Amino acid sequence: AWGQARLGLGFAARVRSDPGAIDNVFDVALTFEPGNLRFDEGDHTDPAFVVPTDTLEYRGRLRVRADALVRNVLELPHRGWAVGADGVWGRRGTWEPWGLASEGLASGGDAWLAGSAFAFLATGIPGLPERHTLVVSAHAGTGSDLDRFSAFRLGSGSTWGDFETLSRVVLPAAGVDEIATARYATVDLEYRFEPVFFLFLQLRGTLAWADVPVNGADGVETRGRPFPALTVGLTTGLPWNLSMELAASRNFGLETTVDGRVKKGRTGFFVSVTREF
Image (cartoon, rainbow, N blue to C red; front, top):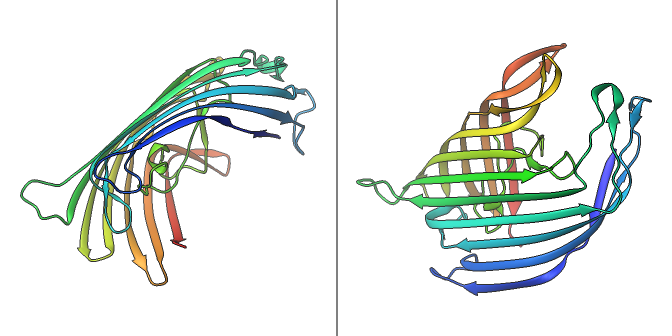
């Protein structure tokens, strides 16, 4: 069992950019983020497990965002582009090897670096009216000396297009922050059609790859694994300033354990209802 708490203090600069909506800005932020990591045995922790050391952790973060997207009535990317990047440096005050001695105690992670970036492009389709939209997006991240407490987290979630949601990696049919990884890359291609006002139908293909731990001949190893997926969904407005997002995904790379047997492939459903206040 583990948890963290941290504060952030820093400097930021933000400049409004074309086409001039509230999310269309160039934003740079540099923050210092001191925090605390705490660990304890869980109800089913192996008695031989060496619990990680409680420690102070200091992070420095550089964040850059540039957003020139035109969004539709439901704030989904409609035309234009957006890019962003994050760089994080971290150091822990006290850090000792942890884990199961029989599997080899985990060492390292006391000082680490991580960098990630994303890009979005929304465009029309030549010869088709305004109701047809293509959205291409890519996300990638890599790091040095990352462990499960500093790794990137990939999981399912909304594909909404507000300013900061764009930076989040969405892996269809995965659980919330299910995959911890030190390297990943994803590419999404989405076709969106508006048959009637306030209703958008979506078809999205995802090519994703990430380093994950797997059981090999010599024990647990870290290998790159593909996670291709196909998603169909809709986004619509509702009365009383409500919006709803529904999606069904099939991920062909995720695994599910059923009755002790591992099955390749997983189907997931996503439902979100939000309200503007």
